[in-house]
Amino acid sequence: CHSALTNFTIDTLNDNIITVGEDGFVRKWDKDARVILQQHNLERELSCIGIAYNQGAEQVAVGFCKSDHCCSSDKTDVAFVILCGNDLTNIIHHGHNSQKTLTVCKFSNDGKLVAFGAKDCSIYIHSTDKDFPLVAKARGHSAPILTFDFGCADDSPDSTSFLRSNSINGEALYWSTHAKKQTPLSQRHTRWESQSCIYGWYLEGAHDLYAEENSTCITSCCPLSDSSIVVGDSSGRLRVLPNPALSKDTVYLQFTSHHGKVQKIELYGDSLFTLGSDDSCLCMWKVSTLSWPPTMPPSLYDDHVIIDEKNEDKHLSVNFELATAQLEGFDFSTSHAEKTSSTHKPLRPWIRSLAPPSNYTNTAGSLPDGRLVLERIHGYNGHNAKNNLHYISSGESIVYSVGTTLVRYDEQGDTQHFCSVDGRINCLAVHQERSLCAIGQDDIVIVDLKTLNYMTLCKSTANGIHCLDFDESGRFLLALGGNRLTIHDVDNEVMIASTLTHATETLDVRFTTAANTLVEVGRNFVRLWFIKGSDMRFEEVDMSTMQNVSCLGTF
Image (cartoon, rainbow, N blue to C red; front, side):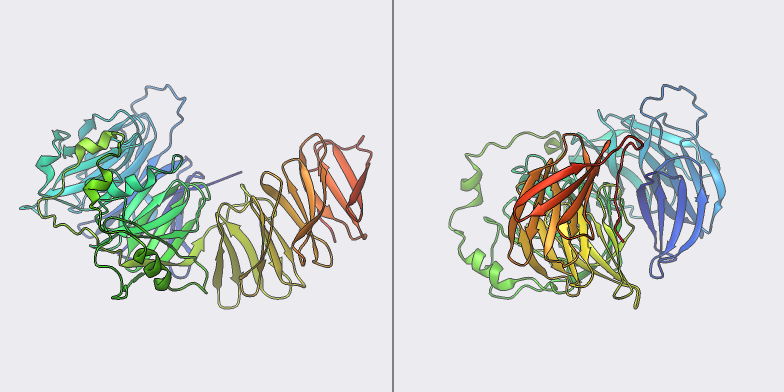
């Protein structure tokens, strides 16, 4: 079964990661040794997690998933539990609030409050006193809660007094901790304990940047420093922007590893952790300070440039020459107001909630000063890809894919090496002797497994490649995409043969050990194909005693 990782938090006191998943397990991991220190099965699907250090005691709050079709009105049904951080099997409290799935939970910095956002569009605020009583319920959103941040008054930095919250349909609201609504202007002096809300004044320009991408939006964010912020989007990309990012015409650095929604981002020291909701993997990035050369133009407010850094070991620096050349071609003579005065900007619900803080200073034209290098990917997902895990017999290495990243794990040294591609990886094929890896996407990318350098691109006429196989020589590559089989000459970068597959669904294709022969299998059929030049003919195999054949192996 598919048991996905659903959320995580950082135990900063002990340098550990705590995760929750669909399998009901809470697990505490040693961040560096990558081993499980503790685990406890709560026997229900888990959705969110938060951690606090209250009077020397470590407490972990865990929220439960509930069926969207459940119509139970049982108010005694447990919605969350509070665990002892030093012993996850010790349940301090069983809590009751929402009848729907809890989507996010956080403790306040002063340790006096813990709050839960829920799919019922409400935020439940509990005291951390004995029995964790419910002190307030914030109701006002029209969609499930996406995230929220605690805040304190500027003159009372040690006492949490406010919340700001986002819903999944783009609402931004402000509250007191007694669930009384606040106006955006009244919160200009509030000091926020975190910056996880994606709908706010500091990301107005970032959302404008995505406005031109109809199917992509910001899904998470986290400040890297006082001057840089990283956002994750629904396509799996990470973008580092100036903080605040007030104009779509801004410089940003782009990094990729996940495929699909980046669900959560957390910074701990000089490490950034990102969770992908589709690939269910946790990526750890090294954060470093980026120094731009003095040749950069003094103001970049009116135009933008994308600097896309790959995550391989061989791509460790920003191409300043390229960035400078692009920027020198921009026209900075037109003011930002003139450029946007005739442009219609669609109204978004949270725009009405924009109110910069009272201590804001204009930083227009600033550059992001943080950059990311992928250090580690925790986890593996084989549910959305085919044949994407291979053992390299020539050495103690394993090759697999996660999201948009090809990973080579070397047992000696316990190291990972990465090659990032554009778009999700659907399948892999490896030729051991030639040290080649074929990556199936819309087209086929051939990579040298020793260096992880790109070698060849094989264009495909199919709608997405979902199965690949090398022949014994490593020269020819068999590809299945849609309802078409194709054979490619890898050395000459040409397609030499193509034919339609069986009318029913084809599940796997492989070269056989016999020359110029391959086998195709699927629902209620097996075919042997014989190749002569560019001609392909097949013979059906008697399937009277068999039903579906889902995969093949040759030896």
